[in-house]
Image 1 (cartoon, rainbow, N blue to C red):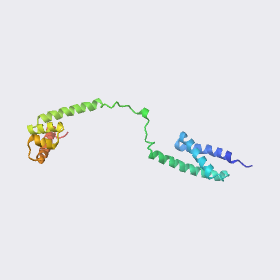
Image 2 (image 1 turned 180 degrees about the horizontal axis):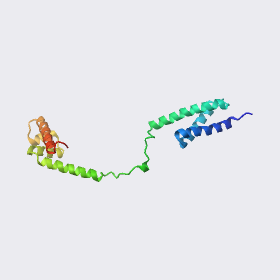
Image 3 (image 1 turned 60 degrees about the vertical axis):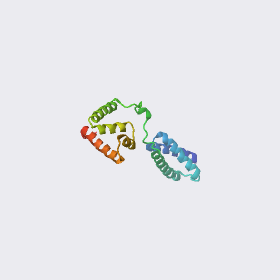
Length: 166
């Protein structure tokens, strides 16, 4: 009694889908089984016996599963999060961040007020967005390196007024 190639492929398909579903999930298993059967039909159409087709089909399936996983890693599909599970942000900072920023600003303002005149003036100009060359001209310094030195010393003094840490 001879079994037709079509009935062999139907039986193989069931086994291939079951094996693939246990490794990659039911949705992808159907696609992989289809790819394996297409390859069997195109390249190995001369094979008629189940003894030849069964090991060949599972070898092809293993390669297809490896390829599927490699593509998924490359596309970062496995790292993807479900968008419906993520909390939505309106883009505004939260209340804790706003409070911390306000406290930091108040501490910084109080510390700058405690500084001597030149340092206060230097920080005012820096906060206005002026560059070192503009500050040099406004403060009447002969060299820009002097402004760099003043800036370094003023930042150091400000850090001391803040208690040694920002």
